[in-house]
Image (cartoon, rainbow, N blue to C red; front, top):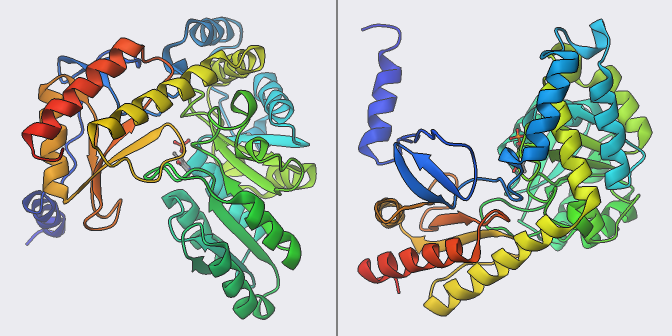
Length: 392
Ligand SMILES: *Cc1c(COP(=O)(O)O)cnc(C)c1O
């Protein structure tokens, strides 16, 4: 027996249960079409909502910044000084989102690991939506605070948990995803805000899938609901609609100032590179200049969902461009995904434990980079595979 035998056994077990994740290799730029494992396929997988991951304006900004300022920041910002491009990005993000201040992190994941432990600790309590993202769950665990999960998007359940538990703790925080990535539903933020206000609890929303998607010109869920100044902490990412990489925390300036002193991923890990930050700045420019890409995204999403319903597919409860195609059991979803790939469409099957048992699905991610013709090709493939497998 070697020390690592157990790992091989676990891997073999995943494979025998059909739960082993075979990761495909992409050899083209991101866009409506990809070269995946050597084959040209229609891309229904990525979070590149606005097509910015390969946008000429972002590429040009990254190149110019690299020529001017080089690549890496070479140390953590709090020790060796912070580069102007990161500061400029934070100013512009705050303006774009209509908040007092913003701070950037290496990713949305590290933004959650930074902000939650900086605001609550082991004497405190977190009320967390049951379906919150893994990085929120990890941030909550790191904080040491008591975690109380309330029923998904259920404000009554949230208030019941608050009433039953709040008095036993020093401080409290409510945390919800803005858009839930597996179903595409949106948190009832105005009602959650009313509860947060009533009990005077800090409110945080993780708007990773809403940034660049929801609200006027992609300003996010707080703008979508007109809740400016009412949500204490907005977490976001620049790895999805922004097409680059990096996390955001936006909100009251006192919270952002505190994160520059106590956000551990800020204090102990370097920032995103210069070309990343410059490309994100170019993304903000594009979004401020025009709502055209965001409008196209929604037009595409509405068209695709309506056509899928007409074909007889169940697209769940999505209110966003995330389009789950509900299939039931995981093996069916996996076979559906394989047959789509053979038909030239790249769309991933998602099963347990990412979604509940019996709720396996194909998740289609619609983008502004899809043309009407692309969407029609995708619909045709779904129709053929759906008929072939007896789904429709
Ligand atoms: C994708 C996602 C993240 C992680 O964002 P990265 O920038 O890719 O690390 C965090 N929270 C939610 C809700 C997400 O959907």
